[in-house]
Image (cartoon, rainbow, N blue to C red):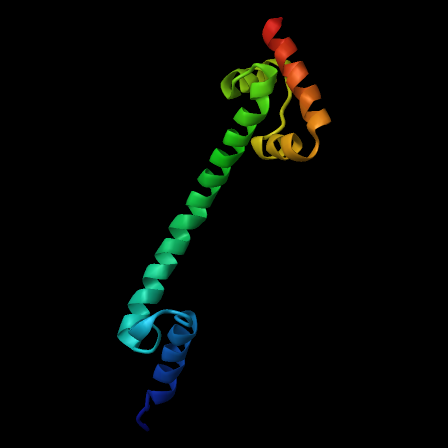
Length: 119
């Protein structure tokens, strides 16, 4: 049985790591040990931040909605309460977009929510 020389496999593995580490600063891009650690850590950050991104955007939509309903003498929480009481099931992302791009449509929704609160 002939012996297996592993140079090709090792080179391919290293190449994959270097490709992922492209653009990193200093030895993190061209030394296999440092690059491996950096790529693994980058993957951890990416995984964590994919989850965090959802929270961040939801918080942004809530802030925008709060600012958009204030001229109608409502707070965000009262607005959401009014929406649920009136049976309007539009998510915060769409509401935020409406508040920015379609103020008339958003105003109609706010009026309905306000009416549901009064009733």
